[in-house]
Image (tube, rainbow, N blue to C red):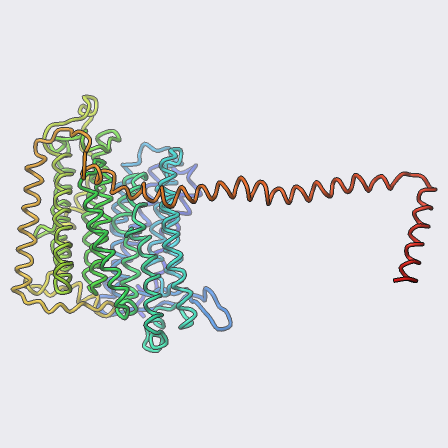
Length: 627
């Protein structure tokens, strides 16, 4: 086995070491040293990931065993890492984009106190460690440990500014909604153990294990896994936590929404494609939920005015596209879009952080405008991100989104039409965001305008790198219709089977032209509508519904949260206080009362004691003689 693969354990260990150093030394380390340690360990993991990727690309894969994590009489789970085409690709995305976000954070979080600054980097390192564990695990249990780890870290990072109760509420919301999904995933694992007796990927996906599973078993297991994916990857009905996750620092939003946590569900389903491909009902459910999520989130994003909320709903919508690809069996397209989305969405989140940094914390785009002349690097890179996510030819998003749309077209024309409409909405609201923020005249205060400036190099260099990746990242998946060989599909073939669409090149050309033409029309419409933007009055009618996010949060509050709070209040005031506490306290009072009465028997008079002895003896004789 190659020596590089022998060092794979260092990839997750290094961020964990960074977490320990920054966590324990947060009161003594300087901010510069904390930032260097936090960034360096992720950079080292990225370098190792690059070496591993090159080794895997040359044809060497491995399942690395370290020790038995759990061992019972008939059941064993090993602590194994599985290094293959799928995991090596995700290692690059997580560590590469993660490193850029760490570097960006050194400037963005500079105003934090030293101990808080070190704590922030400790959390980031722990987040990266957990995500690496998730994608490297050789079985479902190791994956689940990483799965729970990113859930914990998301709670810590979303609620990083814990003195603000709204932020802590958002963190709790993310934690609880993810636990709901995690329960489904956990039940799926128990079902697998009961039926095949193992959680090892190589064994679960073997012909012998699959033969033990009936179609009902496979459908039930995959549906429960999908429930877990809806929590992590923010699909209907468990998507509402993700927009609220904007409470965390902007680099955290980029890390959660671009390359790590929200893609966990995509990775899990892609890794389990051998199971999902045998469950047509589950694939139909995934297709419907993915498309519905893409449309719902895109419609909400149209009327949002918080720069990060627009991007958050954009993420939910793009995740819907990925699930749409998974549901139609196009696993490669979903993974491809995960990669391109990591580039352009991280770019736009970090770009929004640059804007917020310049605006002194302001996030309302209605109070911005004309920022291009003050922040040219941020403006140009953000514009590139908008072009990429809109699917303009030549940019990364074009190749991945076109592959998803063509796959859906071969599956169902109606679904394709709806997916294309969602793509047009994406182009519209993203250019609305860009036009309102960067063009026109400034609408903020004079003090804000006086302090407008471009961000420092530690923030702009990651933006430039991500902008370049947002352009060139799609060229690993150039389809045959455009003269390419889809290198990514060829690379992933040993692990993930490509869907067969049987579309002619002429049909593919037509789909590309139609989608590109309509996207350009959507961008033009956005330009004409918002180029002379002035602060609007509150939305009315259907616009108000969109502005209030279809009232989904209010419905959840009314139908789920308040009833649960009422039940909890009843249990607390009546069951807990009156019945349980009443029984415990009543028993204590009864014993206390009985003790006070019994003490009168201890009078201290010898005659009374003799009398009691005689009475006792008489009672004993009576029992012996007559009972």
